[in-house]
Image (cartoon, rainbow over all chains, first blue to last red; front, side):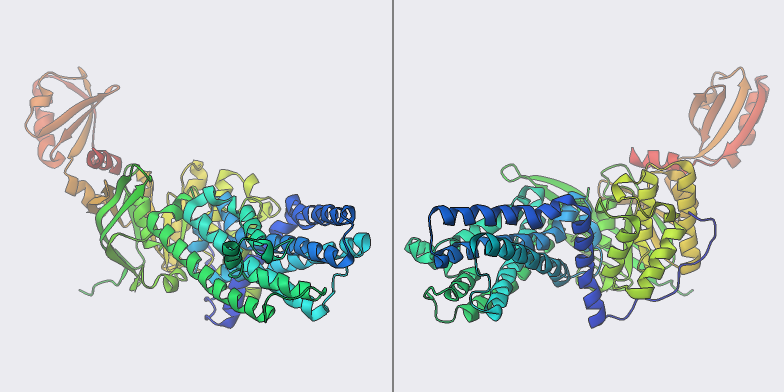
Length: 279
Length: 315
């Protein structure tokens, strides 16, 4: 340390307001962006896996000699899975980075709230999700003639927003699991999304699922977003107002996931896991 | 006399950690600890490993919820008003860790944003702290590649981002070179002197506690066993004064049986005689030695140091 005994700048903490809220929110976006820039595996998440998924599924549709509509039906699912996966990972990173580096306590020592943590990292997830979608649309269009704006730009924008809201919910639930169970729950960050998209009818209409599973599918927002986007490719919609229902359900789940993460953090403070995750 | 306002007022804090699913294990980390720290004081928590120091500090820093008892920091309840409080306190620990691939400036910028700092204020504060803790030459180094001393300095810099009114330091000089420890201690003193920051620190180094702290609490088994200034503690524990002698012959027979003699210990060519009061016993002791023709080569009286008090309490 310097031998100069100068006092710290006397600038007081700014008053709390919307600007401060926004600054706290962008803290997580700032960190996720730095990590994304510095780590080669993040490039893999963004390009390699989505690229491989689009090519392998596209080739499968060619081998099965599917019509352009059926090809779109399958590839829409491929795009949805990749976009949701990438975006929800970013939300989960808000906690996972600290788990891996054992620095959990520092962020919970600050006046940070759940929405700062979740929305800040979600913003980066949305950005990365859009890049994934654009890349897959490009590969799909060039290689397999996949019309990526089949239902019109607004349709696609609403579909992507739905995917990203689903990612926010899954990401927050993953954060809650990790805060509750520590590194043991870490794999849920990669596994959870596959479970949800399977139930949401990723490569098939949910009518092929057993009746009781269909009831579960009907409770998942992504089911409605997939239904809505596929309607743009000429498939009959199974629901009356799929986008409206999907967004309403998403809102409910965002509230539930927020509560679950807050409860998990409180429990972690009570059990001492929050400290153990920092040792 | 006016009573100094309290920065910390903790009453009867208790915390038990539970682990295991089938075989439930319980560890009582705190069993009713109370302490009061005036504003602007440097307060030390001493105790053996597992005594409950870090648990107590973590409850006060709003990282842990107590099972029982209450605590206020700057008049705010640490459980009910934790969010508001976090703007006004901070913490650094000796074994701190940050996200491995962030660089020092990025670590500070991230946490600075969480404290609501932005724009020019954030850049100014980060630059100032990097300079103050001599981290500027390491701006391009990722956290994982910093030395232990640099990591510790970064942890301290992070703890000053929000200019905290109450600062918790958990073994801040753990594992550091003596020269770095000395500089960190001087930074802590400076903080109190210049900013009026209340500092509560845990340490295993008695010299550190004696040098820095206005008051010290000894904690063991989740209970505060003794509390006071270093001098008060030495008197309170009544482990006596030490008369260090160099004699010929080295250990005269019958010395240990003299009135007021608590113990006699040979340390090399020196003899440490612990007596209940040096003032009272020294004349008689010297006379007794002279009467027996013992040659006194050296005689020094010293108070017990804090380490001896610690050993006595930790026993």
